[in-house]
Image 1 (cartoon, rainbow, N blue to C red):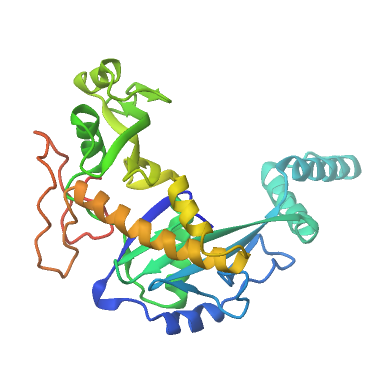
Image 2 (spheres, rainbow, N blue to C red; image 1 turned 180 degrees about the vertical axis):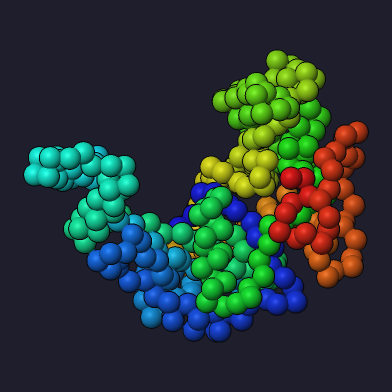
Length: 332
């Protein structure tokens, strides 16, 4: 139940989702297994196992959403063997060579023949939607997180959920924190990754290392930027922050898990207590992390200025993207 990685999407405060409408919308697209010639299928499933008649699991003003996806597994080696056999049969029977175009067509035919008999693998992507804090938080990263948001948007358009735009880029802030110390509420953990500028720049990875040691910080002095940094928030959550503003290897420490376990011994009570506690803890973590990154820049249509940086910015910061382009972080 505990999320292990986080991708953040900012909800539009002017168009926050209504959970009853979202429940109805997701119920119209339930998961169904792959058809005979389908390579994959996806759909929503009940987020709480003990509430099979509800797509959403609600707690603390937030709602958990689960998307299930099933993919056909058709190994390339198997397809290649079938194609080679058919090519050999044609060349032996018709006394001619099979060209590249014909081989491609044979491959497509073989795939269509094998697809209904292919094995399948399935996986689930989860997120929670929190109108109180204005975030959609996905337990996924990269394309997987974006696909989850897109699947929700298809059922309840327009559902504006955008990548967050902070005044400081994560790389700039993390480099400053490694050199000068973590911001209030955070402490450096024991993992980091640094890269030299340029596509061919050197990469240094530190694991289980004292990040305050001079041999680590001297890499910043030579011009390297931090792209991943291990942090601990309030002695309650450990994670690795990336330069894409994603949180990897999230670990809720024992003090939090103990609080959840005190809610009851049965699985249903533990699920509800875990969701409630997780949402509350991540509200605090995300809020303080965004503040440490200098606050958010206004999105298109908002006139309020961005919050002042939580601590002085370094002498050189990346150029900002136009404020109107809300889908692109200003530090990319």
